Length: 372
Ligand SMILES: *Cc1c(COP(=O)(O)O)cnc(C)c1O
Image (cartoon, rainbow, N blue to C red; front, side, top):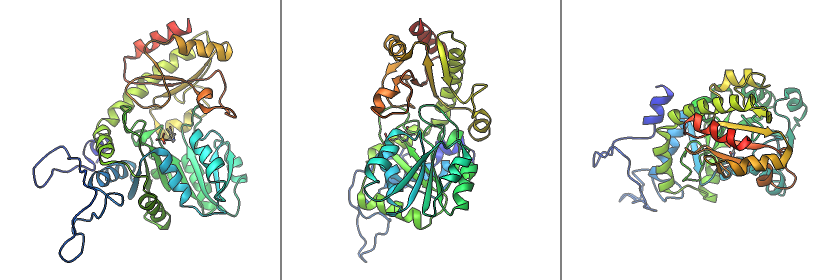
């Protein structure tokens, strides 16, 4: 089945008892045992597994082409579960421009648990190779990156990881399985913040880990999920499954809008730099065209005149909403350095746009008047 058909059907079935076409929300925290003491329907207790969560995991695993998935109550909990499945003394290579929450986990939480890490420019393959240590167990990839939209070659980095007997995990939040399927390119694990495009409506926080094989490592991720218990509610799983039915339409429309907005910005005299992998001249354009076309709904840019000018643009927009996050139907604008806080590597004149589903001309007119 093609990805559009999977988005509509994966994880769903007609309820055998009622014939209901749309799934029900199961709120029960506990499930009946048989007279023999067994659990004939496979469910015991809702932290360890529930019908809505199972449907969601099946849906996203099929979209990503994996064999199993573990859903969490946030993208950060999903990321942490991957790190928690490593052991003290293991070494992780991660991108310098990893999602700032991911970098904070490595620097501030897992440091105390004895996890070693090196941050590298993930687009420099020689540098990735140089960062390998005998105890390297994981290379973390995020492409396109946040907020500069750098593109990492997933198959090349996976090959480097595998030569070193390490795993490659790819945070696929910004691309979604509609545009990019990292497991097909050699990655071992995919991680999502389902809060973003998969949720798509700004009303659910969630995360998921998908694996290409049911190996020892994934069994530890599953154990972290069910024993630490950062699991999503049945309602959140239901909302996500509902939203994913339109994921392919949304992300393609958002990509089309983003291409138009990026093109407009790249020709505007008051814009110094635009970061969008679909633009000619973007250093990662060829890799992006091979592994993720179209190019997604995220754009960042630097207006002329430094931080004050950038703040001015953000203050003058009328259709874009000044807010963090991404992937929703409405367009958002964000001064990224100030949300990341002290020590950020993000340029202080950079504005990040999450392009939504409005008409592209309205978005362009709004930016035009804000740029002045
Ligand atoms: C938002 C985000 C996360 C964290 O997800 P939460 O659901 O906010 O915990 C991780 N990675 C990327 C790329 C993100 O955009």
